Each structure stands twice: as structure tokens, then as C-alpha cells.
Image (cartoon, rainbow, N blue to C red; front, side):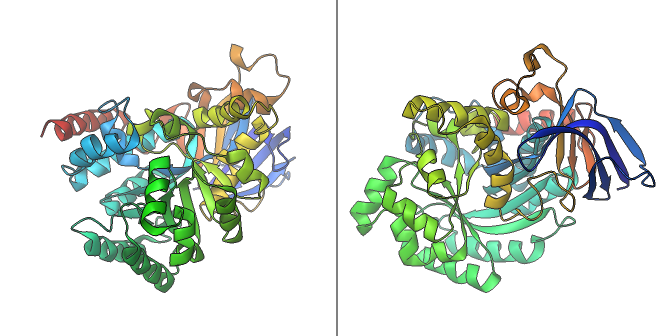
Length: 427
């Protein structure tokens, strides 16, 4: 990594204002913004005229290798989809499948402006391999199901994975523990997860309150909501990234606030699987950190964070009949700075500022849908598309250059993913 100068860019700053400025990158770090010192010389200069520089998007909840199941099982509700289609197909996965499925996901995410993602899945060393090779940033968790025959093995693998990969790949990979959900992880198993998390100093990534059926069953079984149960078991004391949180009460939200639970909101997946509409405005009003995720490509067709931004901004206006609940500014923050905070990376990435990692996306705004230019932030949220992504920089390295992936072979990825995805559902 050398020195890169982004010249004459329209920069989305920490105050959510857009101003024309230069950005100086030295190694992996943003060192100057504005008028760059005359004695600072770049190894590479990128002319950013008609380009909007934004912090790289943070996809806070994925099952990346599930790209292999894209278009296989659509138009189904969550539990029917999982039990009758996805879980049986996942039983056929081998480690190389996960590697290529993850690379397919990573290629798609990079090309649509994502620089960091949080993943929960299986064969996680292969996910880490894909992350290391591609240059993207990731927070990884080995998914665990306490009701599965390999439940104890999953715990052991999670510990090994944390010890081997936490802060690896030049710090681009960090690790959490990933118990799947209360309905697949009984209380005694979750207590084991808590004990392991405390011994490792790890945080927890878990699905919570995704469907009304899950919440009703939890109350019937334990007399508590999933959030209340997690508090009782000590899960929330470990630091939690909670995916979905569609069906949470005001009492649940208060518990989450007290425990600093960070939420990964997945509007596209929640709608496609008929899970419901999360009370995001209420969670934001309570002071919770709410980020955005795409979930697996099998549940949401694509991994485009611009689509999630748009859905987050539009869905809650329609649902609550209040156009100010989630404005464009908030929706973009949910995909950038809030996402970084949700993943425990708020001091590292999520904003464009000196001292932060150079995780930057350049959007080419020289297209009809970017005019007239009344409000760049509004245009980003409501008008931009992934085809506008021109350049992606992660950790100071250009991994997408004029729409071309520089670190991975897109054609080979598509070939391997197609071959393996078709095999998985035909076994």
C-alpha cells in the first residue's frame, strides 16, 4: 500500500454534509481531508470530478455463502423455508462450497459499495480465506445450533476459530461467537456460549425475535420474550449484535438499551420471508444503535446495501404514515457509521475522517438519475444504484478500480458458484 490522493471529490463528511475536498491516504489510513499539504506527494492520484466519496457500506448481517441457494426456494415463510428447503440443502455443504459461495457474495458486495460485512455461517476458515484474499473487511462468527448433533463440536470450533483468526488479515478480520437463535439454542447451551464468550473476551452475534411465532413459542416455553430470556441467561452482558428484532416490545427495547444491544435490521429479508416490520423508529428514538443488513442472498435475492437503505427510508414512512421517521440522512448513517458501531468497529471505520481506515466508495454521479443536484444525500438514498459504484478502497487498497475487481477473478467465481449451487440442491 502506498499513498493515494482522491482529488476534487464531493465528500460525505462526519456531519452528513457534502463538500468538495481532496482526500489523502497513506497506507491504510486517511491522513488529510480538504486542501492537502504541498509537501505531501501521492503515488497514485484519482480524479474524482463528478464523484461522490462516501464511507464504505457496512452490511451488519449476512450468511454470505447462502448465495449458493439464490433463486432455489423463494416465496416461502421463514420456518417453512428453513426446515423444508435450506437446512436440508445446507447438509450437503462442504468447505470448498462455502469458500466459493462467500467469494460470490463478496464480489457482489464490493461491486455495490460494501467494504465491511458481518457473517454467521459454517466452515468459517474458508470464509476467512475468502475475506483475506479479496481485501474486504469482515466480522465473522461460526454459526452454532444447540439442538444439532454437533453442538459441542461447534463450540470447540468457535473457540479455535476465535483464537486463530481474531484480528487477522492485517486486522481486517475480527471474530464473534454465533449462537443461531433461542429456538435452536436451548438455555443450557446458551449458558455454555456465555461462559466461552467471557473467557475469550468475545461478543455475540445472534438472531432475536425475527418472527411472531418465535416470540410466542419462547413465551409459551419459558414465560419470557426472547430478549427477556437473553437477559436472564447473561447473553446480553457479553455485548450483542442482534439480527432482526422484528417483534420487540417497548419493555424489550428498554432492556436492549440498558445492555447496549446493537441491532442489525434486515428490511428486505423481513419482507420477503413475511417476518414483519421491525419498530426501527422506536428503537432509534430509544437510543439504540440500529444498522442495516441484507441477511443471506437466498432470503433476499441480492446483497445490495443501497436497496436496504432505500427500503429502510421508505418502508417506515409508509408503515407509520410519518415522513420524518427515517429520513435519508438516518438511513445512510445506518449503513455506514451506525453499522461500524454495531460491529464494534466505530473507532476504525464508518466515517471519512483523518485517523480512520481508508474504507471509501466513489460513486460516479455523472448520470441522468443524479440530476438535478439539490441534495446529494437524498440522491444517494433514493436515486443511486450499484451500477454507479466506480471505485472501492478498503484498508487503503483499491479492490474495485473503474468497476473492475482487482483481487479476485469474477468469471471463475461465477462458474464455480453456479456449478456448486446446482449440485447442492440436486443431491
